[in-house]
Length: 152
Image 1 (cartoon, one colour):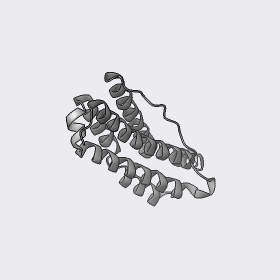
Image 2: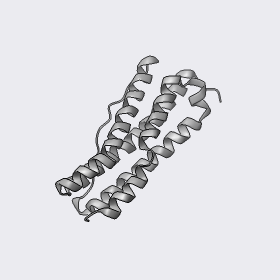
Image 3: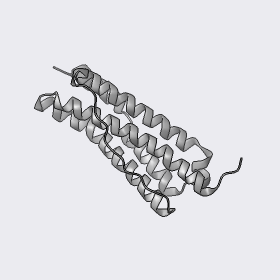
Image 4: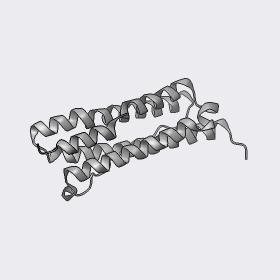
């Protein structure tokens, strides 16, 4: 079934929006973990985990907005979800964040591998998705390292 370029570009935006939603979940979870840590541990979490996810989130949102604007499509407002119950604990929140980042990365890999991204995506869009993935690279390992040294 043939599709129009407008439909295909909207499909790209929707797929990127799914990743952005996952990154917002990760940020919410990391923010909740931060609140439960002492100042020294919180600073480490911010530097090693929160800031890379925050940068990736910002880059993904900018990529989404710029692509939508270039092709006259509707941009979307993204909201931050609630992090969950405080009883989840620091380790649980960090694991939730890692899971959300992994889901976002899987969505972006599928997006990059799709023929639609090549056919109707532009250089800026593809570069933005690549940059988001680069910013998230190694986050899971960083989270494991953080959790293993947590409380020491």
